[in-house]
Length: 363
Image (cartoon, rainbow, N blue to C red; front, side, top):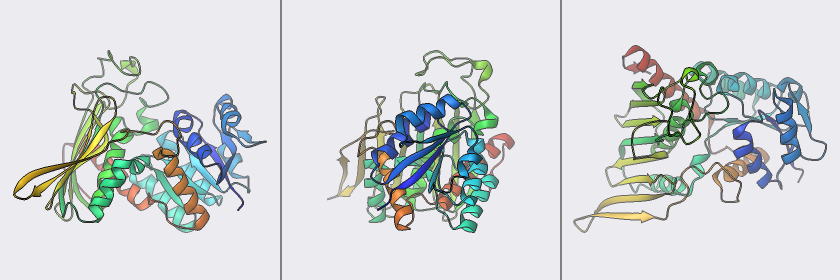
């Protein structure tokens, strides 16, 4: 079988930490033949570390897309650029893996959906936390009815002090927001996927920047308060059409000891489940129900909480990449459907709108 040829657009942190190592782990299926970044040295560095022989580098993504031999493109740029680069790549005949979030708003995300339908090319979004062992176990439990009807859930994306200080994370125009659109999106994606419910009815949200001037103790070093244009914490209540309710909590900086990232708690008619996590990002999955007239708990072995660094065969990023590559090769559906990611983006957009207006937003 001839291997797929991949182009990388955006050679920043997420490319080096997740996507390129994950594709390299699946080198039996793909070669990375082209790299693009507005900083030439970044593209050259990526090509040297991960590129196939004679891999090309570009500073213009449109020039990369002109290469007819490229089958798939990974869009790994700041959020603002996700939509138009993805649309151009689909129109150029490429299948696209776009890093989360899908887009900065639902209008831009809709353009991506329309382009995928119009071109017949595959589109998926980088929600690799679905591939964590605990996520896979909990999803299976939900599908097999172990929890019954899940009518209440909590989506957790809480860091105590871990605000990213590199790239454009503090830039509202480039990113569309802060912790909510960055890590809250992972927690919301997982929760909706577990519940298999993508029909929101209304959203209420609150967004805070209360710790902007208190950068001490940050995991990645102190941030610059004068440059921080986005929120440090955000919270929301999402009501679904069937009456189910989701509480979403997200923070880069919050005075708490209860840290949980890319986790969910589910409450159903037959039982519940909680994805727990400690400060070292290790965790455990706990199921609870009533058996023999007693309250019972069952614990599953835990694994890494946010494993999008590294590229071992069991790493969620490597599993995500392989499933994506096989979907292209065999013409099957990727695990993360763009229609699902669109709903995540629409809810995030409504949370920001609700916070800005002080009103509940009806979808």
